[in-house]
Length: 227
Image (cartoon, rainbow, N blue to C red; front, side):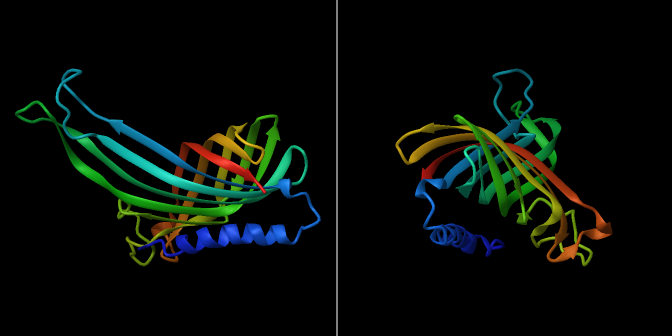
């Protein structure tokens, strides 16, 4: 498995949050929040002679699922800060239209795709107003393995190792709202935007010093626990 580091992250992040909490015993416990939830997105494109015809091969088919954990401490009434960890797993396939077969179903060519996995970890700040909030974060650590990117080799010719994040261009932003369920539990809905560049693969710079950029907008649904 290419993401050996992900498992320890899911153990270390909550452990770090509880460790930080233990150093601030004089503070009100409700100033600490732990949030966990999931993301899901899918995108498809296809060609048909007419609407309602049998479906053939899709031009684009992408599905992504993820889980995100965030721990933060309330600094002011409207401001809190903490750490986030996000892990995504998905499958992407893209191809070119190449006509129809004898049954009238779409045929494609030049297919490119495969599975991918991505892990992000870093600090973030959270601004709130009533039930609404905005967040900004930085991916201090990130890895992405992508079976579809065999065309992006490292300077040593490596086409299978994971990509590493650009040291500064790894940004996260989100807008959302929370609805109280109980005294200590909220339902959270947010729209998340991520922009990042990858400059290394397997510990080496990409061939010809190119940079591989990725951005996405993803919905998130989860819960926030005050403790």
